[in-house]
Image 1 (tube, rainbow, N blue to C red):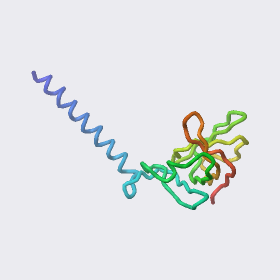
Image 2: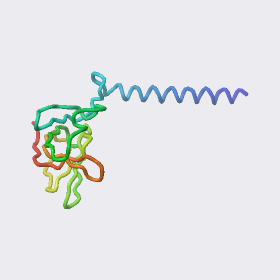
Image 3: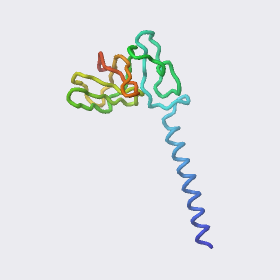
Image 4: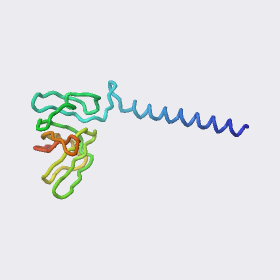
Length: 134
């Protein structure tokens, strides 16, 4: 009987610990109720900025062909030969794609301007211009 009580107590402590850890991780990156790890997205046509972590922003309804600018740090460059992908940190909700060789280093702060398009049901930005922000 004593062993059963110890197992129940251990399980309860484990659950509380996991909940506390999840809260700490979420709260640690928060600033004003929004997670800090969100890329800045600017609508190039209207200069309207939004935050990619928002539940619903103006950028959610962007139509294919609309031009936007995304600023963030390069987390990873994936070169697949004819196409390259840029992973940003903070993460962008858009897949960032280039059909030219990307000449940027991981860790660089960049500003990407491109056009929105839908590919296989997901929004992506096809890079028109990329520049390092100093």
